[in-house]
Image (cartoon, rainbow, N blue to C red; front, side, top):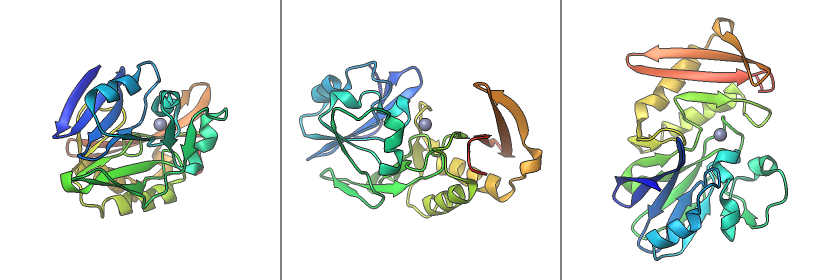
Length: 231
Ligand SMILES: [Zn+2]
């Protein structure tokens, strides 16, 4: 599997083309962030890489982040996103509330709310490394699609609370290298200047969708919304 060590003990794993999971190896515990499409045997991979127990967490409930859950005995995912899993899972599913902390030994991983992309989107702050694992919640091209997406007011709250956290870079679910904090700031600037009337309309998977773009220097923030998402 295509693996890249972002910083000591933090591995970004390309589970499928441009679908990334993250393995954080602590002294006492490891943590797997997302399970991808389910095409690869991530469990065997993790067992080869680390000798400690490994917690499995999902950033949110979309299929390309939960596909390999079935290979593990238990997984944590925010309750708001459980309906996205469809059928009842055949593994133990536990809630992943904001504020949960995981002691990995030498690093504490703190769960934070990143509602927007989905209502149950979560981030994981690795405070010692000043790194945030963000799933799809802060993607440069931020999708707010379907009834599972939160509205722009909620996204505004999320961005404000995220930017109060001590991190310099973050890992996104479909970007091969860390993104700068300034990218999350660009999303907030975009919201502050958001003009619904200036959105570009297009068709996405047969549904009416809208695109809004904000540029600041070399940074670009894009929001994609559709008729099912909350205004
Ligand atoms: Zn997603």
